[in-house]
Each structure stands twice: as structure tokens, then as C-alpha cells.
Length: 251
Image 1 (cartoon, rainbow, N blue to C red):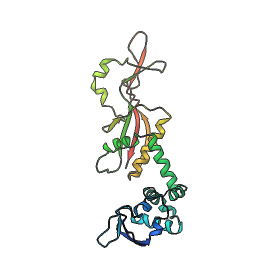
Image 2: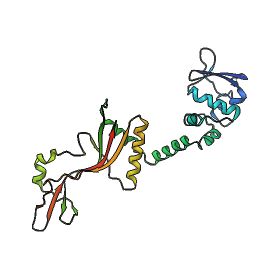
Image 3: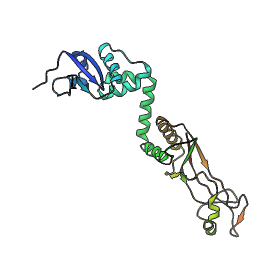
Image 4: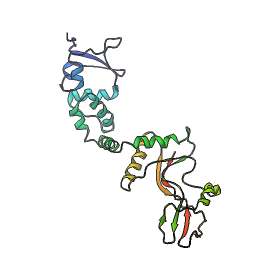
């Protein structure tokens, strides 16, 4: 049996009270609001008998103005109204709001996050290394490579030839490095992906309320403090740290 909805509908949306004609709520028949008040569904009521919808009442005021008069919200409210329009299945309103600058940026951001689904995880790894209370600034490095390397006399990096006795000498491993105390490792990224991912992580942290700057850094500390060392009859090498990654400065 269908529920009888009155012609004038009293509403409580997130604590804000509204009244409107039933025909207003049914105006877009493919919307969630039209389905809710079609009489086919039971809608919860508050203690005063108003139909209760657990959503943002401030944004709903703009939703109601659109249903009544096809009026769009001011630009500074477009983003939150867009979220509610999508929730209520008002595709006509969503499409109109998609032309607003803030909404276009929101859509582009979501598309980027969908493309790079690890952005949120990377950002949370940065935040995990940040002290609970930041005094001044805090630096966190996401490292893409680590370990000692050797550079030949012609400038080429030679893999897997670092003398073991250097690595066994812990005094060389106490140098000041971008790795610092707070570090985490991420997979190596191709040059095209790296700037985009770093920018998206930065945007994510900024939306969380942090002031963030980023820089790609490489540690060039040399074990011989700039001197060249001969390790075989065939090769002269400079052994250096070579840690590199993205350093986030957060305040």
C-alpha cells in the first residue's frame, strides 16, 4: 500500500526546516527525491512529524531553489551543492554546476585520483611520519632509491661494486642525509608520472589543512669526501650515498 504524502511537505534536512509543494519534490521524476516522495517508500519523520533527510541543510536550501525556480547557487557554494545534487540524483543540476570553476576542479581532481589510486595511500604515509603536533616545520622524505653507489672516472654510476669495508664502517652512515629520521620508500616512478603524483599528494595534504611544499632531492655525500679512490687496476671510483626522493616540508 502506498504512503499518503501531503500536498505541502514539511521537511527536516539535517536540522533545518523547510516546507514545499509535493510537486516541487517530484519535478525531476528520475531523481532520488522523486522516488522518496512518490509514496512507494517509507520516509522517516522527526518528533514533530517532518520528513527527515539526513543531509546538509544549507546545501539543500539551494537544491530547493533550483527545484522551485531553476535558480543556481552562488559560485562559492557550487561545490557543496554539486555533492548534494549528485546524492539526490539531480543530473540536470549536476550538469549545470559542472561549468562552475570550483566544480570543474573537483571533477578533475577526482578523475586524477581515480587514475592514480595510490595518491591517498602515499599522502597518508607522509602524514604517518608527521608529529601529532607540528611546531614550525616538519620534513618527511618519500624515498625512491637508497644505498651506497659507485661512480666511475667517466661519470657513470657502476652498480654492485661498492667495497664491503665501506659499508661495514658505520661512521660513514651517520652523515646528514635527506633520509633523516622520517622516511618511507615508494616504488620508482617514471619521470612523466612523478610530477603529477607529487602534485596530487601535495593537493591532498593541503585539503587536509597543511601548508606543504615539495622538492625532489638527491644526497651526494661522498664516502671519500670528494676524493677519488682506486679500488682496482681497471677502475677509479667515487663512492657516494645517492639516496633520492621527494621531500615534503609541512607546517
